[in-house]
Length: 443
Image (cartoon, rainbow, N blue to C red; front, side, top):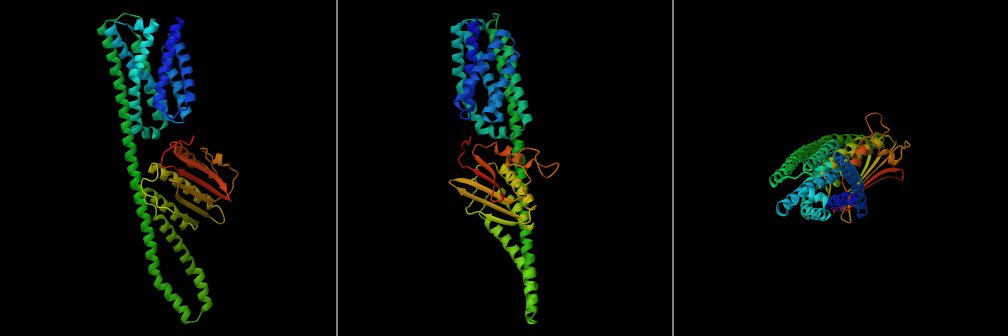
């Protein structure tokens, strides 16, 4: 009997471990899979030996948390229960076929080692191709939605899947030790399949609604970016028009000083009034000229908004954009990109305004096919390390602050092809982000 228990546990563990491999590949290294096999084998043996089916959700939850920790992807908590549910459904369908064509009962499957092995091999043969198709479906339509879901929604969906797993096991286990007719077996398996389809339908409705909600929010933020961009253009146009209006008066003032030969007053007027205006206008025009190379509207908008605001706050701004930044050249969601840059630039402006000589440098360029952002600024050292600055709630600005850099960290953790470095170099606080065009893992 113990051999049957261990064999059943090992076969279930092997089945779910293979399910995990199919669903997560290549997120997980091969050396991690034995951990799942041994964990599942021991826990399922305890459940079968004790005949305590409520242990199933605990088994699946423990391994789901372990999978999320190993992969660094929160949404992978869905994969273990998904694998078990599909294995359970297809396993019962295989059992139905064995019952109809081989007159093999559930009791025979649980008590005969050869039949048990045949049963699990058939289940694997049927379920693995379906799991592969599910992985392709998730990657194409739902991974982006998973990555943007709140933790509460992820927990709710994971709990739904665990409950579905437990209900399927409970419904199927009623007939483990009793003889049933072919008709009753068909009704039992049909009930399992219908309950499975109902649960899947509910989850797909939730995912579809979540994705539509995200797309709607993305459109709203896009329109807000467009409006902000338009307002900045209007501000620039008004400044140029005002300068043009004042040009005649400025020339008249200069002519008056020259006609009356008041050269000392002319010199003072020029350096105190004319030259600062010229420097300010030159800096703004320099910013505008560099930003013309950015062809992505959302990116151009946030850069206009923040960098021209910095210029108007008398920050010495240097903008270096040597390359054309074409649409679709940055493999990052535009909303995430603008949120990231907005936080970095806001922090850079706040920090450098605390110094006697505020300086902000912005670089955007291409390097070996990757897009590189470098933001550096002067700052006052307040004794916080770089690691501390990125923790949620850690701030030198008082209550209500301290979430910006932690929010950026959460955004960047969704992407495996983005390299980020925070450092202090030559008295400047530096944020560098490198986005690969072709997604590749950095871990």
